[in-house]
Structures are given as structure tokens and as C-alpha cells.
Image (cartoon, rainbow, N blue to C red; front, side):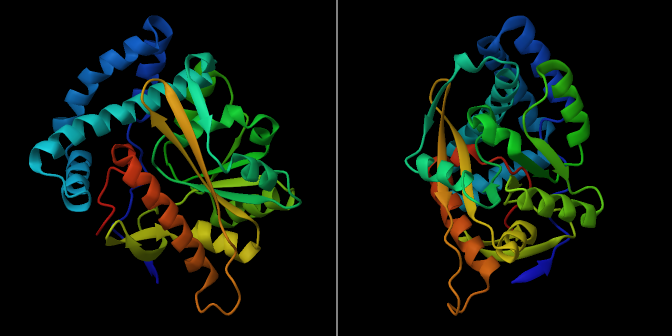
Length: 299
């Protein structure tokens, strides 16, 4: 079902420019582990002083995960702490401190690389879970062919700040804050060059077109764009998640989507969305505290 929604994400991300600048300086002068320790104070600040985000996380814990009150309080602390850790890790890795971390690639990694080495462009769809950006340095030459489609209205300031302090990443950014036809042209051009276009498949801007489906037991909206573009251009699709494990370790998860079969009775974009939702649910059930959508996702 395709709709236009006026209650979606507002285009601003938790941990904006100030948060990035603060942790860049903290990592530079006191180190990664010291930044983790200081993060506890930041978490204590965010719970009462970010009421909308805290309320959304609370309703996720209570209404979706069905946690009790005490467990939900513990969840809030852990959820904010994990989000802060991923921000610190992102800055540290981009600063060249890759050796401080350990990484494990999932069982479908070889198939994923075969897909990237194929004869067509590829659409990659991730989500605001875990820390997807940590995988970029490990894709070697593939990373230079990646184009990240971003909905974040603050991305320019954050990009400038990170580039100033941590260097320029291999991938490029396609902003959909610009004219939509320009964005579509850039996406099509990248795929025609046999490169890779990466979307976050779980957020839509307020007022934008969406697809609705059951997710984690309740109906939710997803951005129509990634699924319409991928299905109509007929390129291969893979779902990708980078999840934080205990210690300073990450595991990468890859799921290759199956093209919608002709005559199966379902629109191709909905078939693709169904596969994405199944993959995302599997990840969230294993890592519920790494869901970082701080607004009322289920409305």
C-alpha cells in the first residue's frame, strides 16, 4: 500500500554536529575507551533532556519488545549508550584507528562480493540499526564505487566536520534534499556505471511517499523510493547490516534479495520490501538495543 504520510521522520539525526565535534575532540585527546566512559554522563543527560526521543524509545521497548517497566528503563540506558558507542566508533575508524577493532564477516560475504563484481550496478539497502558505516573501509576498491543516498538535512555540516578532522571517506553522498530529478539522475548514472547505490530503507521524510506493511507485529511505514527504484531499474539488491558485538567487535550481515517472480501476484516493490522487513526483523530480534530510530516509527 502506497501512501503519503505527514507524521514521519523530520530529517534530523540524533547526535548532530555538536555531538560529532565533541566526540572527535574527546577521542583525539583522551582516547576511545575514555570516550566510552564519558559517554555514561551523556546518556544520563539525554534521557530527561531529549523527551521526544526518549518517549519513542520507551514506546518501542514497551509496545514492540513488550518489556516490563524496569527492563524498559535498563533498555533506555543501554540503547542510548550503544548509539553513543557507534558514533565514537565511526569517528575512530574514520580517523584511522581500525586496528583497535575486530571484524567478522557473515556467511554470505563471498556471495555479496560476487554480486559487487557482477556485470551490473547494485542497490544496497541498510537501516538505522548498528553502525553501517564501519564496513566502508573493508570493501577496498568497492568502497570507492559506493554512493550513499542520504535523507539527513544536516549531512553537509557533519560531512564537512568529519572531513576536516578525520579525512575524506571513499564513498560519495547523493543528497535527496536537492531537486528530486537531480537525485534520480545521479542514482541512475551510478548504476549505469556498474557502481553501487546505498539506501537506508527504514526512514521516510515527513510528507513523502511510503509503503506500509506489518513489521515487528504492528503496521509501519517504509520509504517507497529504494524499493521502487531497485525494482523498476531491475538491478540486483542486497541488504546489509553492521552490528556491534561485545567488546570492540563488529559483525557484518548480508542478505541477497530474490527478484520478484512474474505472475506471483505481488507488485515487485512490495515483494522486495517483504524480503527487507524479514531480514530487518531477524536483526532487530537479535540486537533489539541497536535500533536507533528515535521517533514514533509505528503510528
